[in-house]
Length: 193
Image 1 (tube, helix red, strand yellow):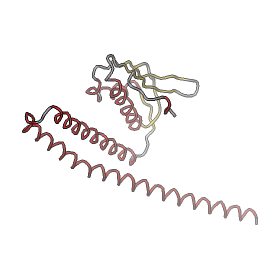
Image 2 (cartoon, rainbow, N blue to C red):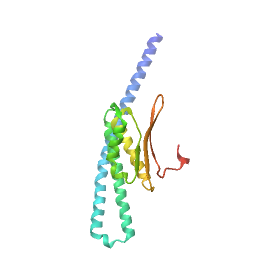
Image 3 (tube, rainbow, N blue to C red):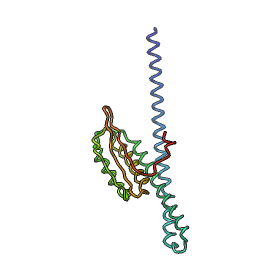
Image 4 (cartoon, helix red, strand yellow):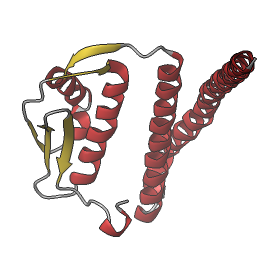
């Protein structure tokens, strides 16, 4: 009798967990769809703003003082930054829609691909890539992490006279920790946690 009650209770818990998982999956699908839709909806006004500023600068550049030109330059930079954020949101929504594919990744090859894609951001940075070996993971997700970290390293170290970036790893017995170091502005260690 007690065994039958235990089985019934266990079955009810399994049904409850299955229902919760299905609800969670549905919410994730809705969130991904929303992110994709919002990203596309934000693109049109950004293109419009950038286009109008370009036309304005072409026709009236000589009539705008240096402060006005600086402010318009700031607007264009922020429009481009917003465009990059939208691209990242779209990438995230597309990645979220795919199943994770765990493969063996040659990390040096992947880092070199990312460095090539980000070559315009490199500026005068000196990049040192150590021997990284292989890792197991979803190549699209790992690549996105590398793009974000390396682009941040370029962005925040390029103000230095001699920007330096080092990409390497620290293997231990049971794991490998990858790192990207730069000599950029950094952040206040008071907020490190």
